[in-house]
Length: 119
Image: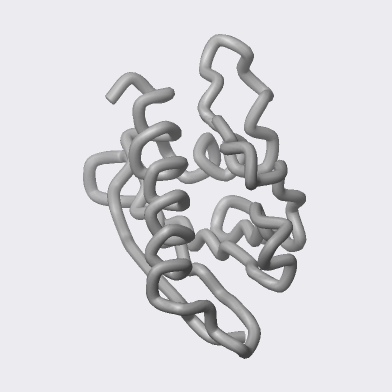
């Protein structure tokens, strides 16, 4: 698979909490965060390694090959350094489509998930 986008940001929750949020987005009804658009579908977990790695299936029926890889590591503040990587098969989508996919992952993870932790 080809890396079509990557970003690392800190989240305030520890890795085991973030991993649980990624694996079971509805596990805490008081903190909903996975708000999908009409052209998106709920991802399934393709792979999980403890609190270090979670891989989602595609969010987009138009790109069923896409995967979103999350690498989680403790950060010095007690939170999580979370890196998401968008992976796609050939042919790589055009730059406009790649930009849309990256923007959506960034919104879901670095905004919606972050805000669900109160930050």
